[in-house]
Length: 115
Image (cartoon, rainbow, N blue to C red; front, side, top):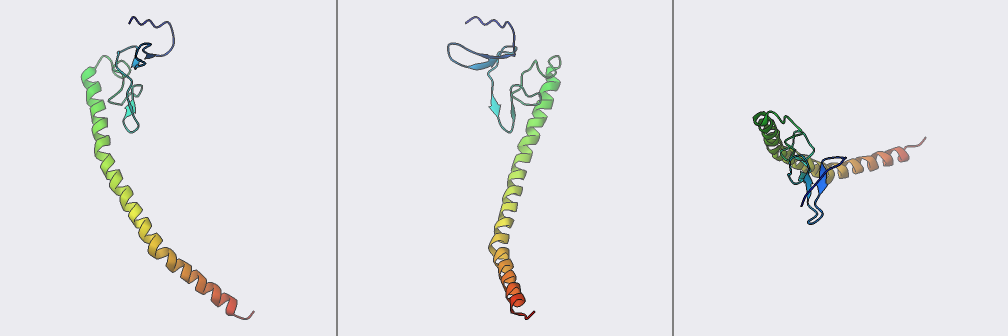
């Protein structure tokens, strides 16, 4: 299939198979929420003509480092989120009933006192 762009962005769609691809590099558009998409400069899925096109080794190093950093940080954030969730559950199960009992007791003491 012959493709010709007259104007507009680099995002193309094949008329036969409906595949989304980049006009500049010919790669498919891929997207993962945490890792970016084809238009992101620092994404491993990014277009090679969008970020440092004249220095491919540096581009791969930078994008690979960003990806590795995200892969290392993701489990830490998951563990931190689970720990905070567990703390919230413990506080909710034990702290909230104690707070409610103290509040109820304080209310009884205030209403029982003659003014």
